[in-house]
Length: 407
Ligand SMILES: [Fe+2]
Image (cartoon, rainbow, N blue to C red; front, top):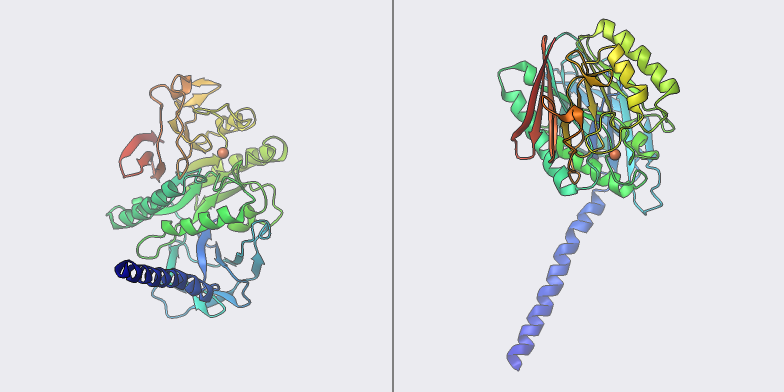
């Protein structure tokens, strides 16, 4: 009996000690509420000379800045954040999160910049990003979409992306260097949930390479990304409902980003026609990306099929990147609604952290030499003078598909 009593006292003591030790990190978190977190680089224009740098703090802060230094140079500049706001819908879920944004221009192309983020005296670790090339050098991108509803897979794919960036830096071919991530949307399941965005933004930090290299993002809006948080997360104007834009990598590559969640006809289609006409004349490679697919592997086609596909064909876009389906697909080259060696290839459809779906392999445009499949993955696009190499990198590193387009 006495032994049981002693045992219970010991158990109670142990339990109290356990609770105290669990509570300790909460206290540490309170102290770190102004610590810069969720750091990201976004490219919405001129990525060889310009970058939007954004970070978050849990508590509102008054003194927010980025210290930026060209790698190896003595001189450093400090940019004060001009935009410091609480995220929208914070009250809805009783979440505290604030964003801080700096738009930096006047940067040098293909240059490493070391950056340190500071909010009310708390600093981030030293990170860096590399501006985009502005000459005709070869380069590689990651492309993917749909990272909204399997956080475990999302974190694993993000870690894999960081490894791919690190590995690419170590190869002898500078064309392997991964310049950025093209993301076709559906970051979260509920676009107005700050809790979900907060988790996504935290997980995005896992794409940072081991040596601190940040992976810049070129974002598109998905059907789940309704509301203002998409604009706030990526540095668009708060009430921007267009979210369509183009980004040039010198005269080598143009990435045209479209928004299937706005009207795809009218102003956007008119913009796309001009965008492709202008840039076809000046760029070696043209890529379009958006969320809901025209040549879908499992769902019904979006209205992009009617309003954008004729423009892709008219201006001979080199590759179209689509999301939304949670499949792996590469169509045959398509022109005028049928297979044509001069046609456009559509790839997708998002697997950066969502439950994969099964494609419909009997659809004519998925037949060989096209392909379809299923699984968590990211796609790697290598642009060289005469060759575009497309690969599907499955979670775990296996190559799930490979295709080349020659100029
Ligand atoms: Fe979607």
